[in-house]
Image (cartoon, rainbow, N blue to C red; front, side, top):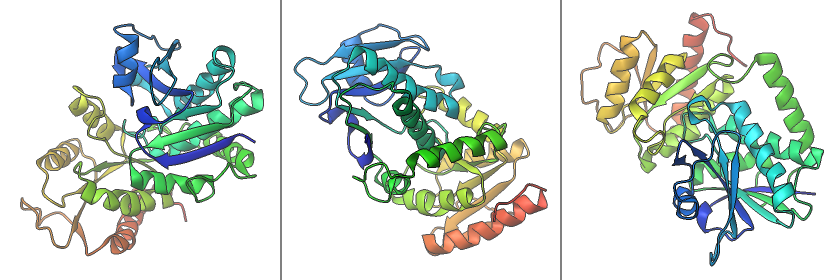
Length: 322
């Protein structure tokens, strides 16, 4: 059986037969420096691909560059990306035994849990269709965010090195059915909650163990923008994501000025905003007229935030999952 794992690490340095990255209008995803160094100025259009050998590399021996449309990237596109990449390798690199990918879309304002599930579905579909290299033994997802890896590893049986569980096919088939019933998991389907917070590793637990956990329990998508996402267009992309969201959760711990700007924009277009802050952090501006969830630790944040969001969604008439 094909092994699928997720682990923490630096993907471009991993020893493997091939790493898969993307390009959109000359902009590369993770491992872009490695890919650009060999592809030069060549553009890979959406739907096309470019497979290059990496001579003398102590890590990957090939890089597969997949052309995508970054401006219109959705969850279904991630499933198709994984399926298409493996299909290309089944024809052009048949002796590949190990393929390295990452959680594409996680830093582009999409819900990383749904991103990973859709990528898994693409891998499963490729295996079912026989659209994988004949020698392929493992697909390794490598991500530099330790908290994300810990959380997503639960989808693969709870350990970082676990093989795909026996219920894997049923899992992704059930997911596909749920998505078909609820609609495409974007702003036009499931409810989207946008999170405004600083790019600070010390606050990652607020998001991964607190905010995202609660939002998923309520049946919503949880999105935020990572620091490197949409370089040069990050402000417009943040505005678009806020505009598509049902509500905004803003973590004002540490008083990051960009977070306050996002709060102001959300208020300006009439989006509900839930303010949160750790008890030891006082707000920089007067927000006395706005309710703020003050919490001593992440465990308390989960309970307080779930009550606040449940009440807000119920008040607006949105369905809340049990």
